[in-house]
Amino acid sequence: MDIRTGLFYLFSAVLLFAAFRVITARNPVYAALYLVLAFFQAAAVWILLKAEFLAISLVLVYVGAVMVLFLFVVMMLDINVDAMRAGFWKHFPLAAIVGAVIALEMAAVLLAGFRLGEEPRSVPAAANALAQYSNTKELGKLLYTQYLYPLEIAAVILLVAIIAAIALTLRERKDSRHMDPADQVRVKAGDRLQVLKLAPTMSAPPPTPEPTSAPNAATAAPETKA
Image (cartoon, rainbow, N blue to C red):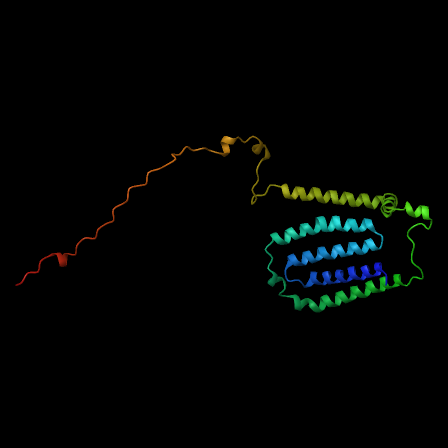
């Protein structure tokens, strides 16, 4: 077994462990961190498969943006973990059946790809062409020629989603506090801060006398004999 095969088994083992911990961790923050670890291991496997662009995209897009957003949302929300796990065992049989069906379908598709007689060659065979070959360049050519219209449609959908999110965030609601930016620009220091001149020392207030209790009439009056 060469070093490349050893690294593949190492990254795959850590990936499976991290994926298992994502669904078994009791703390949602720990689950998100294990998912970040799983993404890094998947990116390492893609680098071994000479798919550098996909590996860097996975790290930058999912780990650097999506998972950080998920992690902040999970940390800010007050999630009741006990309420979420209340119906876990109730829905476990259905989830196990669905997971088994998905695993069998993936096995039926992937196992056929491992029955190749020789290693597939994705690079030119010539030595001079091999030195100038770039996966990212070839992916860019394919993406902006054959898949140009799907790329533009996806870009338009993302643009509409961004505009809709901004519009929903900046809309005026009765239960939200809204401030006009023009009022913030025209504000002056005197409107925000008021300086008061106080004496450096102040005399202590005079002590208040304690109230004395009135003498008892029965003890104060002299006793008289008949």
